[in-house]
Amino acid sequence: MMKNLILVGPPGAGKGTLAERLIDEKGFMHISTGQILREALANKTQIGLEAKAYMDKGELVPDEVVTGIVMEKLSEDEVRTKGFMLDGFPRTLNQAELLDEGLKKYGIEIEVVIYLEADQDTIIKRLSGRRACRECGRNFNIYTMKPQKEGVCDHCHGELFQRDDDKEETVRNRLKVYSDSTAPLVDFYKEKGSLKTFNGNNDLNVIYSEIKNVL
Image (tube, rainbow, N blue to C red; front, side):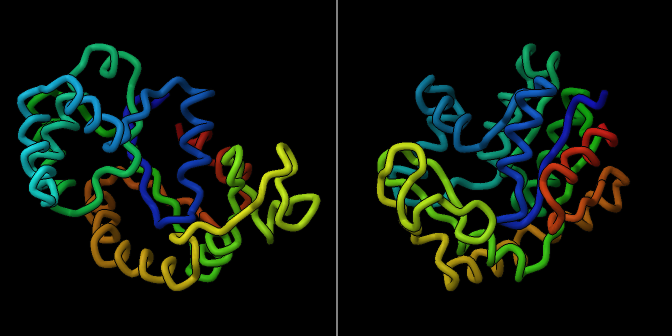
């Protein structure tokens, strides 16, 4: 089975759900940039302190520093043995190129890039339909996973609400940002021959079955 992979696609394409299933069933190490950045800061690694200096000034952490933190994690023996799944990184073409250079130094190869392709209407419906419980944090969807009682959580009876970043106007803006910065990754990995495209409009069980066949 393939060991090292990247999961890319627009917000709302189903990456989070698929990532959880792949981690649970296939044993991949889940590499999230947010998580490993927090680890680097907590452990006060050299590159973690470098990132902190930018964050303390309210500046974006440069691609070179973010990539360095990712490579620090990928070079760990446990990660290299188990295999990994990068989720949420790389986000830009520059990050992808820097990652490619870093991987070559360690002799690590990305075996497949899973690209979930979904149309805008489907994504907007999925995200704008999401409702979260204020008490237990469970998620519902007014279109695809309705609660038994409108506005009330099935599990704890807490109030359901719509997060600000799930409102339609915000979703449209997120999709524009994705298209401008992240979509070029698709061409980059397509040229390298590692891209596998899946229809994110399909039921997630169907997509997961197709991904398992590729892996």
